[in-house]
Image 1 (cartoon, rainbow, N blue to C red):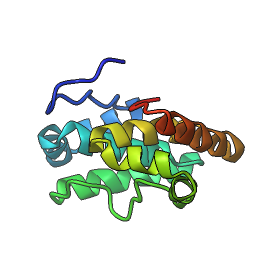
Image 2 (cartoon, rainbow, N blue to C red):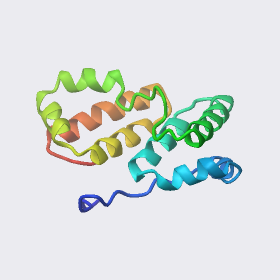
Image 3 (tube, rainbow, N blue to C red):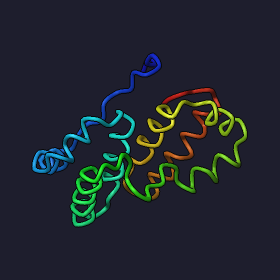
Length: 140
């Protein structure tokens, strides 16, 4: 994947259920349109990380409520897991490369790791990401 010029982040895919909820909440939709691509990606990632449908539904409701209230980021959402920090701490070259990544590049890695829903698959993605980072890669 070629590196995008500064200020040109890829747009997050809006899940259908979130899109419907935004359409039903005009203030939330207006705020959503005003967010940066990275902020939209954070909301989508937070919603997509729900393991149960009920949790996902609650997060969509909460996202619309937060957006309607003017919030620009999901509350209490840790973008980087503790497991990733642990593996990075044990791999100095990967940690150095991680520190050098742009916020967009970090989120791209995190989205890729978080797309593995099973705990073991997620753990393997974290390990693979550290190997990629240690060899100088800037994206999965």
